[in-house]
Image 1 (tube, rainbow, N blue to C red):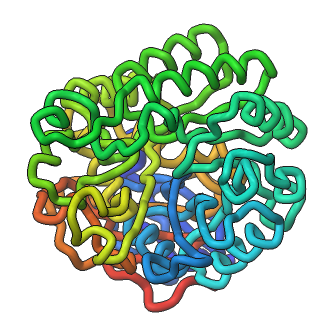
Image 2 (tube, one colour):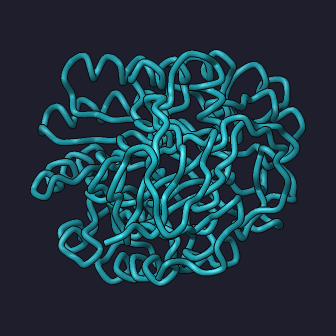
Length: 431
């Protein structure tokens, strides 16, 4: 069978320049001087495995004014993502087999990326009763990641039971580490800036104390735990200690915690209001170092769309959260590549291979090699772009508007189909 098309002269993560032949959904040849029905010039473009986001808020069902599975996965495609994991804080909450199957079906119908629903740990995210984890795992959605994200599973007994339960099907609990009693009314990072502005602070220890508890619980029951959106230098040290001890813990950092600091809150622009909050420059440096040295396993966007009215208001009334899917690769490039401190292979690990492995996504995060599913992001690393409000997302609450970021995703190939070509979103997904 002849190839549908050839990606000519693409740069692989090891620096090799090669042609990549794609037939149907698969990569069928990699070499030089390949020819096919259609040849696409990829000179100067880095070919990366399609990105996998372990932390996306698609808002559907229930909050379609902010985002839908369709618009969210379109934004994902623009950002080079070919798989996303949809958080459970929808309405109704994704705490039953029926709801997670609905979300998965919407993803297939949209056709811009694989959509893997994340199941709630507790019924209604209320932290009181464990949800039907087994039913969601055995459903057509095959849920393997469970999280009450947006809320912390603060009861240690429920957290222990959940960690024990998911062992049966190799699942993982993804914890939003926030001790609720220490963050009542919190509006931003607790520190010098919050003191000057008179805003209630969100102390680092509220995150760190939950992480310390949960890595010890995971060790005790012999289960996997994943820590969402690490944001403090202290959290990094706890994860580093836990891994050295042999505890089965993984951790993620968001693009915004790798780049932005609490100094931005001085503007009182609610686009910078996020949970966990933007921290200090010292924290940013610690998170970057931990991402480079492997203490932090992945970058996850925590893409959290909101309608204009939820952000265009006074700080205390504004919603927490910011967009992240369309800009994540640029920030990863700035932190890992343009800094000179890491390489494209590490970027592929933290944006694709590792999140897929944590979530047990068998067909995502595969290396670009013969026989792999053709999920590919082709990035122009020399491009510079100023972020504008125009977005594939239904919402516009990006903290990067007006900033210049490096790199641009030129093509996104999802299961052999171009969802983005020459920087333009396909009018229709592959479904």
